Image 1 (cartoon, rainbow, N blue to C red):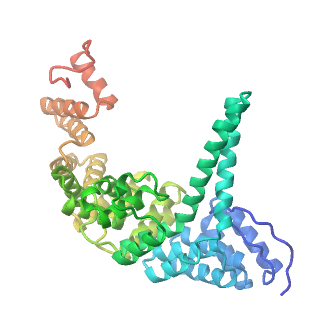
Image 2 (cartoon, helix red, strand yellow):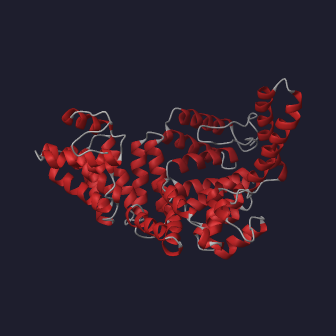
Image 3 (cartoon, rainbow, N blue to C red):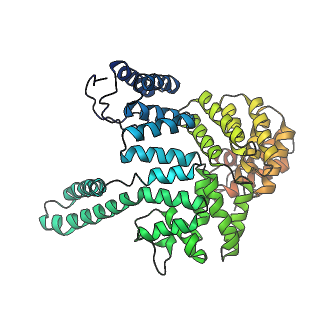
Length: 453
């Protein structure tokens, strides 16, 4: 079918960079894509998905429609459909951006070979990365000039060299984004030799190299940490903090890999001990399938960023189906019900999380919170006491125990717990004000007699 009308590349609400629709896109299919974009902008993700499905049925050869369908399906946790749509788009429009979306989707699903093969097509030409460097350098130059004007000599001696340096760094960084993704996929899959061969080919290796502090490398701190893990394990303690941060972002697999390495190989006893604690209480107790991890992340995004609780619930349910022993989606479902003031449902889900992983610290804390909201104070107190057995320095758990003890008429114990909480976290204003009101405030800014001083 001929081209109905020209299309202009635009950036959609889900991050879609549309391609020229061209031949194969009928007027009806184009209207469906437009309707999908409008629905996306209004936050109607399921409606948008149906419009994009219609567009691809009407115009299966349209890369624009297939990319739109892929992004909508991915955002909703319909990963098989998203992968198929990205593959269809890549066959029809083999651009670097299309291959990258396909590679990222395959990675999220744990399809390592498909991810690597696709990402290898997404490096991008030299001029694409040069354009990034030129744009960043130009912005730096334009920002600098008003600061030194009218000292023309400073424009040439300060602004131009600075803009040139930052532009070159941005060019190098842009070139390495996709290779770094492949490197991470390889390391996570246990293919260390392939990962090192890639790093060597990209010129990332240093002999000797402190990769945790290699400021001259055009790679991220995460890549540097993984290089340290593979090449310089005695100087890889940056992995401990990196692993915790990745876990907080929902990347349980890579975080667990980093922290297990530090628990086993760090030369510092305190780093080994901290890594072991995080592994035990803040990470899953087993190797989570990539699909389950990705669906849990998608559910969290739908719940917290897009405010779509029903769609989030569906994604969490799929995550649980992919790995029933993964406690994080159970805990997130509990938090979802808490946000809806359905405390009984929330408590049930937190309890399920602890059934599959009794050491899940946050699920234990949340269980105490939900039980307290239901007036089940003994159960709440028991939950918080288990939290404190895992982490004696949890100020919020001490504070909640204090309030519960006060409700139970155990005033001395309750006040002492509140004071411990304030000592651990001086920013607990409600607890501090209560203690000040009870004991009186002294000039040294602290409640007495069990002072935080």
